[in-house]
Image 1 (cartoon, rainbow, N blue to C red):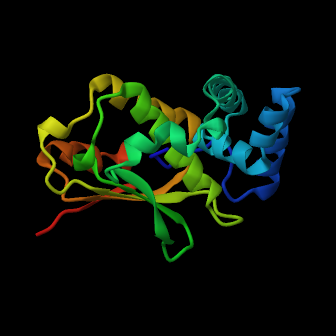
Image 2: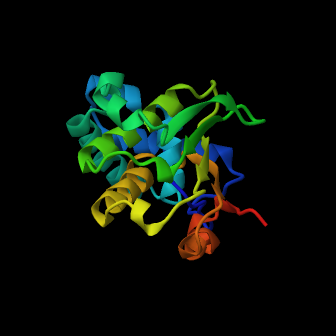
Length: 208
């Protein structure tokens, strides 16, 4: 989700070749369930291909894993009452505004963490992402993140288990969804994170 790939197997300027790859991936998936068919739109196939440098075999494997995850986790069935406790402090929410390009904005405030429930936090993350995606205007596939670390200390850090599952979900089941992210007042411990080329879509916005 974070990284924009380079050196793809397909020429990024060759629209005809890209369309052929999309058709190839769709055919490779075979017969899908009703939910799988709905999820695997052309835009979805394109995102998975982009995430795997337009390699159809790798994209198929990634997408099939996502379909298995969605069939088991059922993210589209999570409702507000299921996650309302996690939302009480405003630690993560879809903003009431969009950026200049019309993209949905998700605001995160790690210092407002209010539970210790691994399952609850993950379900709330998925609910918020699904809600943000649902709110994207037609033709727009990516969102913007604003992460405010003001007041953050190590005591606010999420457990390693939760961090790992969060990264797995974002990178493998919501590929190519992040347009750009801003870290506001990030602590020093995050410098390696936002300076890394792997997370080139994340930008530091510390106060000076």
